[in-house]
Length: 147
Image (tube, rainbow, N blue to C red; front, side):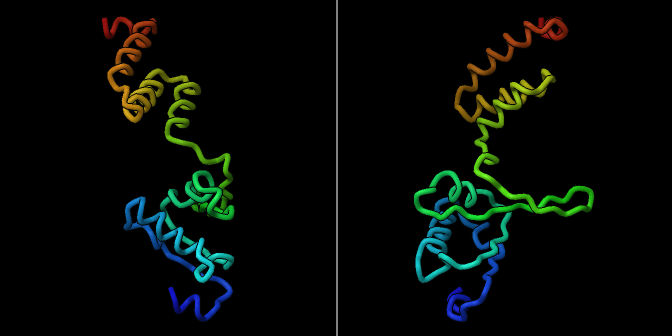
């Protein structure tokens, strides 16, 4: 890393530099790399990773500490590779994703799967089960199955 900074290249490529670390260490490494003047701040950096945590941290959580990054992801759709920009409004919490799927799905089973996940992560597991059974008992086609 120090050699890359010392030689002043036009672009620095980081190939998954944080994947093997826990969340706190990942943040500390990203903080060190992109906030310190002598490191990568203000330089063109291509960071390749499978980890979305740094993107979420830089774009949503710590906007006061990081300049807004230009972030993209690559999508392979039947062999056609495309690059898509990640915008702030594209990033959702898992709770938002669960709520969206519960509201939008026409499948009772799909709604129940996301309802269960929602209550598991919000620590309302048993409350969720009772609501799910009330919901199922109101469905005409499934009432006979559970009665």
